[in-house]
Amino acid sequence: MRAVELRRARVGVALTFLLTGVVFGTWSARLPAIKQALDLGDGGLGVAFMGLNAGAVAGLQLGGALVPLTGSRTALRVALPLYAAALAGPALAGDLVTLTAALFALAAVNSVVDVAMNAHGVIVERGYRRPVMSSFHAMYSLGGTGGAALGALAAAGGLGRTPHFLVVAAAGIAVSVLAAGLLLPS
Image (cartoon, rainbow, N blue to C red; front, top):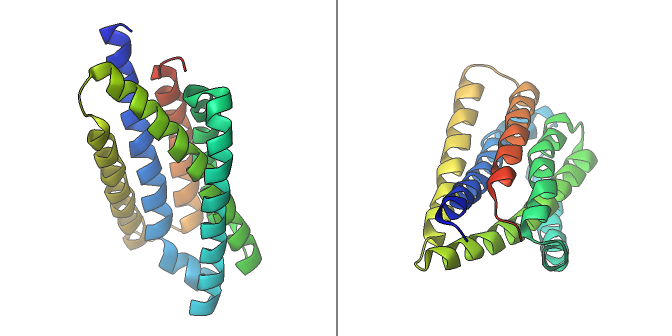
């Protein structure tokens, strides 16, 4: 593996972790607006979170099966833009049932991405012959913080959750295509 390819792949994996953090930070920062718009009580929100957690478990199983079959790069080429696009689900949800389904889908695709990006991170780390995985996880935290900060700014500026989420989803799809193009063959 050439040094240039390895550096590109490191940037691609870092962008992947960053994007997943941004998407998660975006939707979670707007949770009060979603709760209010759908007139959900604490119990209803708990039901929606059950969908989120069930989706995470299902996605981890799916990712654990798909990534070894397709390779981490192929899995990310498909799942990462889907994860960004899945942000539209909570934005467009009109009731508890659609929100729960949307959070299930968001979490399921996120879990597939999680398996694939960590697998690719291991490949990059092996190429570097030194620990670099913590830098990828730091990018996730940075993305989460940035997504939450943008969410707070959007809320403070009066931007509704739907246009906010759709803009982030569109930008996320573009970033995911860029990131996947930098990854190593797997």
